[in-house]
Structures are given as C-alpha cells and as structure tokens.
Image (cartoon, rainbow, N blue to C red; front, side):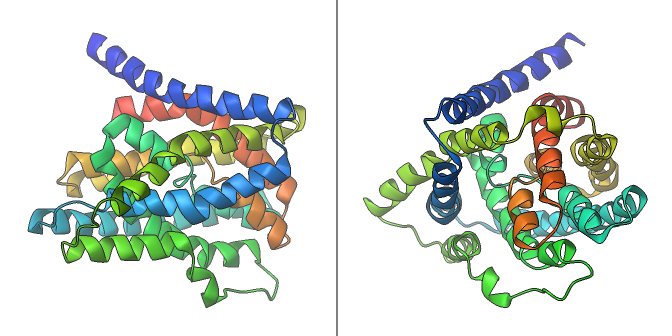
Length: 310
C-alpha cells in the first residue's frame, strides 16, 4: 500500500508541474496578457511547428528489429483501442442524445483524446523521452482518423464530408518523415537536429499554457452541472482506459508500450473538439463543456490510472 501511495504521489507530482503551467496560461488570459486570437496563433505554432519538430526528434532513435516489432505492436494496439472507442462512442451517443449535432460531439469526445497538446508532455513527464517515439506513432493514427472519421462524426446527417487534402498536414508529414528516417537509420546532422530539438522542447510549456488559456475562455459556471457532460467525461477518463486495460493486457509484451497506451487512453477530450464543432456546425457550447470538465477531471484521473493500472 505504501508503495502504491508513493507511486501515486510521484506521478501526481509530475502532473502538478504541468498543472502549474496550465494555471499560468489561465492567469495570462484572465489578466489580458493573452487573448483568444493570440492563443489561436500559439496553437497554430504548436500544431504546425513545435509538435512536428518533437515528433521528428522523438523518432531519431537507432533502428533495430526489436524496435520495429514494438512499432508494429503499437500500431495494432492503437487500432484496437480506436475500434473499442468507436463502439463505446456509438452506444454512448445514442443513449445520451437524439440530436445529430449533439451526438457528433459526444462521439468525437469519447474517441479523440488530447494526445497532442497533453499527450507528449504527460507521457514525457511520466515515462521519459524514450516513450515519445510511441506517442508519435499513436499520433499518426490519431491524425488520420480525426481528419476523416472525426469530420464524419461532426457532420452527421449533413452533406459535408471528408476532404483528403486535410491529411496533408504537418503532424502526419512529420510522423511519416520521422518514421522513414528511423526505418532507414538516417541521422539528422548537427546543427539541424539541435535546432529541431530546441523547437520540440518548447512544446510542453506552450501546450500547457494554451490548455490553461483555453479553459479560461469558458465561463466556469456554464461548464458544470450537465450530467451528460459528466457522463461523457467519465467514459473518456475512466471507463475507456479500464476497459482497454482488460482487453489489451493479455496481448502486450512491452511494459512501456502498455503504459503509454493506457495513459493516452486516459487523456481528456481533445481541445480541437471545440474547433471542429464550430467549423462543421455541431454544438460548440456542448463541446466546450466536455473539454472543460474532462480536462479538470484528468488532473486527478491520470495519476490514478497510471498508478493502479500501469
């Protein structure tokens, strides 16, 4: 019991560091240092520059048959997680709402966690830099699905559909380039790799500041008190990772992969749920509620999940 409590406190300490960065973003927006426009520009910088840089750096590891086998295992288990997520999201959305715009938000929220902005910093804090390689692999699958199935969810019952051009984005490009460099054992020479690494290191503080600033844009009183929002957050933060733990445990051979997958499965609702809802005509206020509640809740549930299940 003492060991479990110690492990919980260790993980909680690492998460609390990120919480302080989130608080800095919240205060910066509340004080007028940041606004929605500047936060949007920082988000664009993260998505288009620093996260792709982090992905490439995380894949600059020596090629080996074992690591390639681990990559295959990671891809297969990531696919299994999303199959489970789609099934749970479909059932939950039908149970919670009859309106297409709301069902789309609920489905999107259950399936797509904040594996970009929060995934890289949280995994790096808990498991170290070596684990970021697997986060990059996971994000490749995430990006393909969010710009295809994710759009289909948000446009349920309407004509808007998937545009293949949206797959041509920096996140997918960096994942493909990084994986090819890994596969063919190509090392990026200095000073280029050093510059890319510095850019990647900026991701954690900037991403947490953006999450905090995003939370500050939501009126807190309007964000709580909706039982459906609480239900979706509970599914996203606890039910989904626990269900996947039971399903995947017999098949995982690498403890690091298992830890990364379970932790990513426990991430709060993706911050871009609100952006997608606004862009594709779904319920953006409901999306804001789910993002807010799940992000606040994850500050407790992530240490809990990683301590008890990993």
